Image (cartoon, rainbow, N blue to C red; front, top):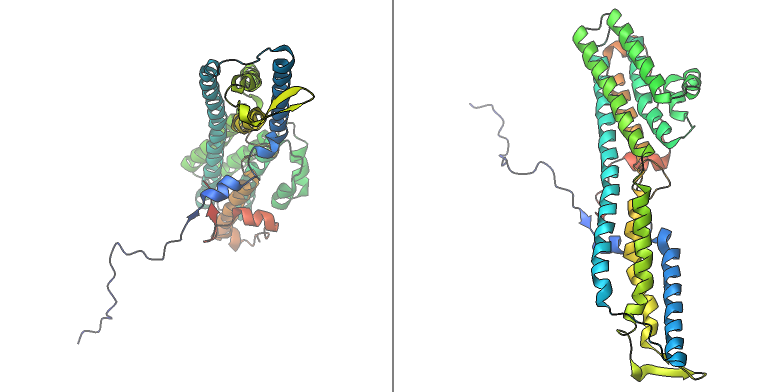
Length: 361
């Protein structure tokens, strides 16, 4: 008699769980104001609209009183508009390259921090105290890098991980990341003397050195903005283009059938749509210029699309604390982990997205 249990056959291509649906919405992205450049360029757009209105009013008075036509052919600005569009795209791409490079550098910080935690837990000396302290200092390193890049004096996370006394030592250092990296190097040297294998020591030291390299890359981005002369030239080009454009549109919006007179001055309904057209055209131009400027420093929290360094650092900390929690040597010697308390907003940032999330990109 066959005693084996008959299990239902499943196809190899059959999904093990029902896939989550992604609700991409064009309209959510198109109508979203928060997180866009619009609030930061709105006043400039209004100013260009006012300038265009004054130009149209002056052109109307000049034609009515002095019979002088203040207009230029529209074809004159066509080539200038194409060149300006190219310059704006190049400026935005240059800013995005810096933003993406910064994100890749922080991806390296995430990976090397995890590698150091795994090496310390798996190949470190048989000392629970050493493993506990080294993994905690490794978790401190991303927080210190974040605070250094943002010039943020708050060291709450460091106090929670290594105590207030050590946090004070870190805050008094002229360059906090170098101070923490030195402590990590000294602990690796101590671990080597206490029984850490030469291969594990070399691998850990390599990972620690790479953290310094990634820090240097982030500092290079932060301290070296894009060429100022290029930004000035692009903005001067935008100003000249938007100021000259109303003169080119005078003939395009003329409609004698809708004209009216006030105090002997003939006004035209059509040409007073020019300021609205100028504002609509100024929106993408000024927004692209602003985005290119905002992306230059992806670490500054005042920027529109700054990197979520708080969430990244807390994710690294949680991963390393989990490694330490699963370390039998550390737990056998009675090293109790502190519970990581995160505020609700930070917990919301680092948790996984819900099924009903609506994505716009």
